[in-house]
Amino acid sequence: MGRITNLRSTASASAAERRRSCSRRLNPKACAVRSTATPAGQAQKEFFVNQALCLLDALHARCVSASQPSPPSTPSEGACFRITAPASAAWAGKEDHLAVRISGGWHFITPQEGMVVFDQSASQQLVFRSTWARALAPSTPTGGTTIDTQAREAIAALIQALVVLGLLGTSGN
Image (cartoon, rainbow, N blue to C red):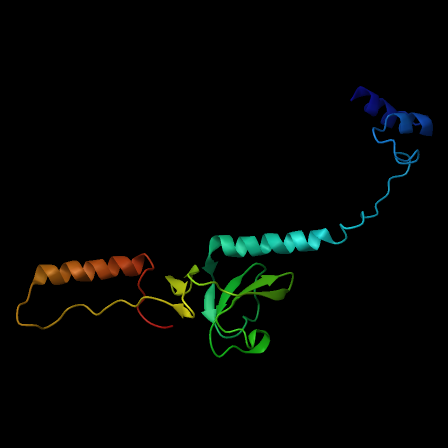
């Protein structure tokens, strides 16, 4: 490391000394002039890597901001939405897809059978089985010939717990 520091700090170091300190000997001028050209086959790889990482972020979380038929007016980068019917604007014809905001544009993900996501706006899990489905909470027991108050309270508490966990919803699509 001292040799590199000395070469950099010495203004009178010759080009030959700089070339000798280079570990790569393919081109005698490789160390004297550094090329910034992208090697063949790697052009614009950052775009594809960044897009892949954004998609991984969206799918890894398995979470959508909301379920809606049209894009929000000011979406944040990386935001993910479930598209409901009737889709409009930039989402037209993409019902049931997931839309992810990447680099100022929308990327659409086709859901797979059994895919589960959490809808943050509805605080509920959704599962895809040819279309998105959610479990709605059953109504609590009322009436009947034999009234069991403790059983009704237990069922109501169970329903409430499942709603809190996001396994059951209270309304909507």
